[in-house]
Image (spheres, rainbow, N blue to C red):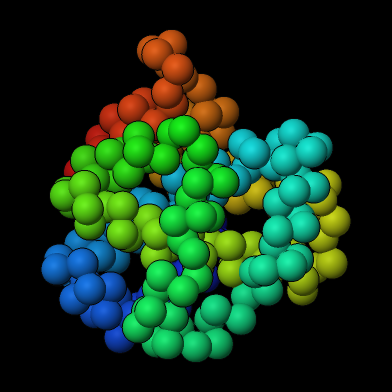
Length: 193
């Protein structure tokens, strides 16, 4: 398990997992499993975006300005009003046109309906950005350092989940249909069964 996934899943244990489960109308175990699937999806997309110098600079600035990790200081407050953190906006930047496909991927892999999958991604995205921001601030990372950190996080996620193959690392479109999330969905679904 990579650092970001470990950090967030530790924060989302207990009360937070129950709050997510209640908000989405799913079991606590399903909520925890879905969070563990959603985090690497978001990290892989961030790493892909930050692999380009201009993408790394944009992410570095967004994290420096808006995501310092303080979301974890009042997690229960955040979970009481998750829309306040603009998870939908974050997902739009992270996934772009593939946001719907990412939602489908999570729904299939975690056994959620589409609405619950979309809501969970919106709840997890600010947590991932908070973890990235906290790491950037604590380690004094510049845009290049942030890109390297996210690449390493992606590789660790892949190493701890070998069933993902190279999909998370390269975000390749194995069936050449223009969407990588369907390929991720198949691999994630197989790994988490």
